Amino acid sequence: MTKAKIGIVTVSDRASAGIYEDLSGKAIIDVLNEYLTSEWEPVYQVIPDEQDVIEATLIDMADNQGCCLIVTTGGTGPAKRDVTPEATEAVCDRMMPGFGELMRAESLKFVPTAILSRQTAGLRADSLIVNLPGKPKSIRECLDAVFPAIPYCIDLMDGPFLVCNEDVIKPFRPKAK
Image (cartoon, rainbow, N blue to C red; front, side):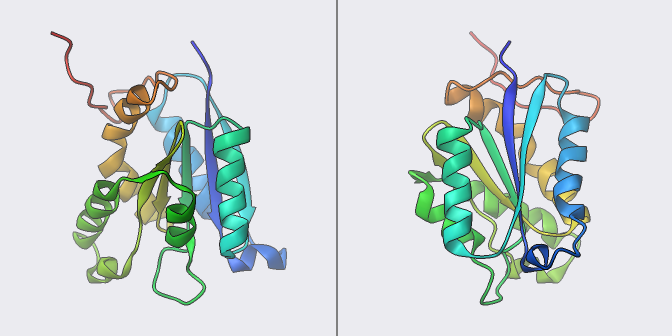
């Protein structure tokens, strides 16, 4: 079985200040460690909220690092510096709008400001890129909602087979006839 490479990208202007503890990126790693029983390797970066830097990072992780899944956190709000969705759309071959729709619907159960979030997802070659919000609690809520579809999406792209701890998260894969 091939060890899956999963990119984790924290987008934050505070990261460049050097006095920043990345709770969001660590939250993604913790959740994925709970979900996945198959071997996986994080490809982890903390970068500033600059569109060209985000695009270059996503391209590198997809094209050079071989990440089947790239999960970003941060830069999805309405502030002028929030450009993660634009960077994602710029590097993707096809968009997967259902991911953003489901994440916003799930987040609306907890906060009315979820409608301000611009999370999205898309495909670049053999990689699925998913934008998550920046708060650790919201990361978990959104991943709980969309992750059941992620292993099958990666299957359809001929990526590594992700095995999940079904006591924690149940992936959906159609039954073979």
